[in-house]
Image (cartoon, rainbow, N blue to C red; front, side, top):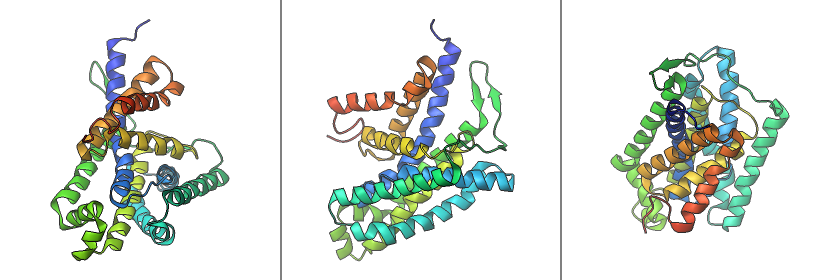
Length: 290
């Protein structure tokens, strides 16, 4: 039996909202990889860590999870800066395999700490002021998903403005293009790397706050989000903010439609199938040059 038009439209709308949230999850990873060339396989686990932190804060403060970004974003920037200084900086310029092993190790440490502390039980915030629907006849809009999508879009635009319209952004782009030349013209490459890595981790704290307005925390969501964000970046082909947004929305819609038409379990696999097919015909990604 074919699903109704309302159900299909609802799935597409939910997929678009989810895609905007994915764009925030992928943005920090894309920024670190594009500027530093570091493949951070622990990226998704920081989202997981942030989700648990939001769960603790929101339930204890009896407040909405989205408001916890006021705490998680600066805190995670500091954490990111510390991890860069202690763990990432010593392996810069080393073999890629060493960098991968280091970030995978960080991810496993975070995941096992979550398992030891919270067990494998999913945790959800008890109070959310945005946990209601607005009926628009053909579709219903979940306030939390709409809010997370709008905030994600604004933050992505904000980061794009930072990179393209400010002196800091110019220094970041110069460092990404050629770090040696950037150093010769007076840019402190070490400080740029610290700033970029801190910003990349801070964005995971924001993503966690938005995710927990309607999602759940468990020790394994980091692996799911980590792989999914790499798929989004590869599909976008490092095609800038517009490519990142478009590929995020595509993945979100694919997941949402698969959950509706097939099953939630299959929805986790379909984006990877699409990823393989796209890269078979277009190795540079959907929006990459070449």
